[in-house]
Length: 45
Image 1: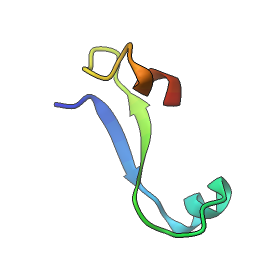
Image 2: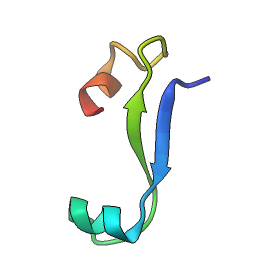
Image 3: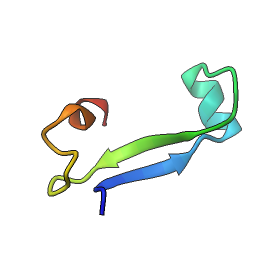
């Protein structure tokens, strides 16, 4: 388990984030007991 929640980049999401392409994924949450918690991923969530 990586400990993050991801979601696909939709056209609405890409537009709201100012992205020029609808592709990829977005880390939408970092779980507190996860490997990424306490590192740089915390600052992005």
